[in-house]
Length: 378
Ligand code: HEM
Image 1: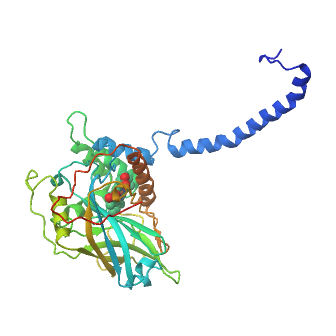
Image 2: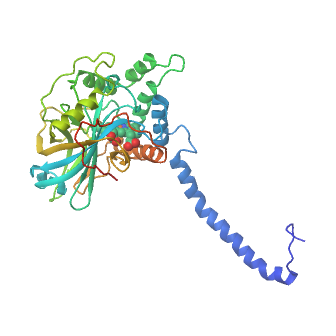
């Protein structure tokens, strides 16, 4: 008797055996095909090498530093939704065949935020402001881009960024970052120390509206003739620049940056010039810690006009992933290693927050501000 009792007659067993053998052989064959695939997924997921940097470890790093705030972005967590349009002047056509640069108007939605993973942090405790944009091109394509108000990024590679993030994690003994760990990071990474010096030296704007924002990462623009040009881009504020005066202990209000932005948009549209900086031979595209020479040509390709603001909510910018690799035909990634890491990490942050319960944003629009038209995202 076989170890498995059956009621089959010996004849039936005889007839079934080749079938069973074939099934067994088939299962082994499927297993042989599947194992490398399962292994590949486990490898990509980091299960086989817990020390390898993955998008999950990066997002876990943000959670270690900032705590877990369900439903919110793991970085740039405090923000507000905006909408408006981009009016292209046609100058960008020489650089890129993307239809957004043809003369005309493209609808835009976006988000202003402060660059930290704490959704209720007082504005005066933050250092970096951001502007994220989604252009809806008339041919159905999208261009998503995130910009920060700093001149360079403080890390050259995703691994360096992770190490910098963790060097700034609170020490369990004190609840504060250990300055010695940060010093050790910058001592080991002179390019990050040089970038930090540039970031600290930058003129610090009073608010969101008079700040200018930079892509930091390099991209490539490809025109109709197929010419590929290394570029970086910036949104240069049209509002006059007013330097920040020290804000002591949040005396101007927990949300003073956002309150000022909402009040400013209520007065009328706020504008930025989209400036494309054209790289030249020898300009490094794979290192966002390095500025390009000041003498590089800057092409004014049009005006961003923001005339609506609304609190984060279902279906608006809250539910958008401003993935920097969502690019129209005519804009391509460069060899900057941060770009693919950003894309993967934003996706993980988005997946986590999308599946979590939501809490209203700290930033709400006061009732006396004119209602904004919906800035629906996707
Ligand atoms: C390896 C480096 C970086 C990592 C790991 C990283 C990570 C993140 C994460 C997790 C988010 C939240 C995404 C979401 O849930 O939607 C975020 C937001 C953002 N990041 Fe990065 N980032 C990196 C580099 C950069 C760089 C170089 C820039 C250049 C400007 C940048 C600009 C932004 C902006 C503007 C946002 C806010 C987008 C929004 O308002 O939704 N990041 N980042």
